[in-house]
Amino acid sequence: MFPRFDDSISLSAATVLRSIIRQSLKPDNVTREVKRQLSRFENSYADIDTIKTLLQHCISRFSTLYIVIDALDEFEKEERNILLRSLSSIISVPDSKAKLFLVGRSSVSTDIRKWFPASQEKSVDCHEVQADIEAYTREAITLRQREQLIPQEQLILHDPALAQEIIKALIDGANGMYVLTP
Image 1 (cartoon, rainbow, N blue to C red):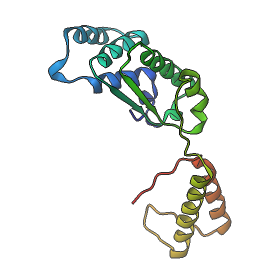
Image 2 (cartoon, rainbow, N blue to C red):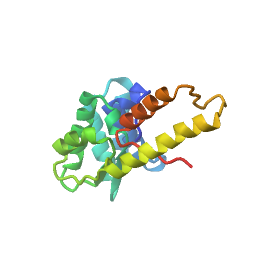
Image 3 (spheres, rainbow, N blue to C red):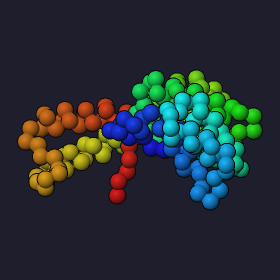
Image 4 (cartoon, rainbow, N blue to C red):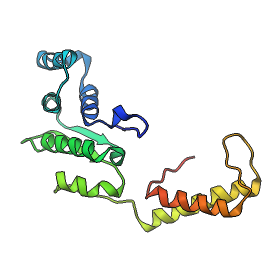
């Protein structure tokens, strides 16, 4: 699941859980029980407990189900806590077949540890990443200035001080997030 900051519906805990359910279903093996529970969604608002119950049923049909959620930091704190609480209750079921992989900026580490105290954490928010972000940003901005690139979508700067201000804002705002592009 990849929630998008510009799509408020994707930032709802219920939407994420429903998406996991939908992705776990195969048309050729939807049981009568799943159909019955899905019909409850059609005619009324399904509360988070109803959604969790159906998700647990769907998970139980797998030998292992990997749930990957990226951009956890994009959720408002309340929705993130609802989602994490729900996922925690789902994987804490004895013999749960669900495995979680949660991705977000370091700002969500405390929330994750609260709901998943035995979780393992890997941080990429380190000095080396920050140095790479800074080098890439400085090179990209100064290259644009040197080459005076003018295509519609590229940055044009005439004030070197403004360029330095933009570079600093981009580096500080990256907060460890760095995507290599070819």
